[in-house]
Image (cartoon, rainbow, N blue to C red; front, side, top):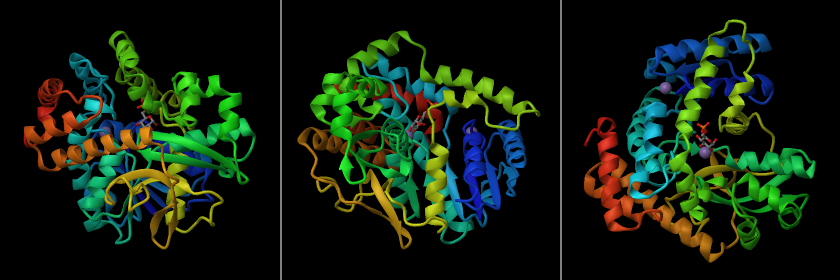
Length: 421
Ligand code: G6P
Ligand code: MN
Ligand code: MN
């Protein structure tokens, strides 16, 4: 099979390549193409990727190209993992919201909204090229954030797409280690929207281990997600660390005002990584890559591609993906994109049913979903009025004057990325 990786110049790519080498029996790749507009990045990342495959004795041919159409032509699957504006735009997303007393984050709140506005048109153009030039049944696997909004943009345009994030697989691996079982024995009761999720159960051999884990390892688990133990025990569920931007908003804002941004930290990691990638003697994934947030994203991607391409037997447990709601969360529209366990069957992903959620979860999910819908509308159609309306709808904003201020800041910081601004 031919896999195209759009945003292949990402410093994350060797993580995927490492997965291809380790999981070669699961996913029989013949050709991998890294597509990226940045030639320098392509040369460095392509170089180490080729050396890694050769070192592992993987038979796949790896090429690089700056030409999107050439890259996706005849692809069996296309992975999209790009960041419009790079770490500079991310640094901006992580700082300007502070001027209106709001947290700055690359996927959550006003910063995530800016990212959505920059990203949706770019990903839709890529998807059109996939529709025209890739194999007719090719899937788009979207890692590009904000995954919920981007996946919905793709589905709305009729693309065969699924969204993926590593938060769930991270929890699955973590619980498996604690419980001393194989990861695919651990079934997560994972529910919500991308980067707005809770683990409500952790089932192993038919038994929910989460109540016992919360009782026995409360401090450790709450510490993992940087939330108060009393909050976690009160919820009876384990939120992802992205919920910290809601449950501990003011605390995060105080921290962010004095600490360097994540973009700055990532820039430093990337400098180190690129120097290693340039080193011809480097033939394996550098340990420094563990400093990035993408742990297990290669496993998540490869297992998903294997399921789509029939290389995988029926799994013991479903995998968590971003897909159309279609009634699974009855309080959301059918066409909303949710993040829940699902199985791939007869050419599509089918979500498992989800037990009724408590009112605090449905309330927060509903309000963020409302924002996400308005944000996509703004990303597709443009216009300050649409941006303002989505901004105000975000539960971290709400106040009209603050929304006005944030809208002005967003537009000033992102004008060069927005065709309509
Ligand atoms: C996690 C999230 C991703 C996000 C990444 C950021 O993996 O699930 O959606 O892109 O963290 O990692 P970084 O190293 O760029 O901060
Ligand atoms: Mn790039
Ligand atoms: Mn994610």
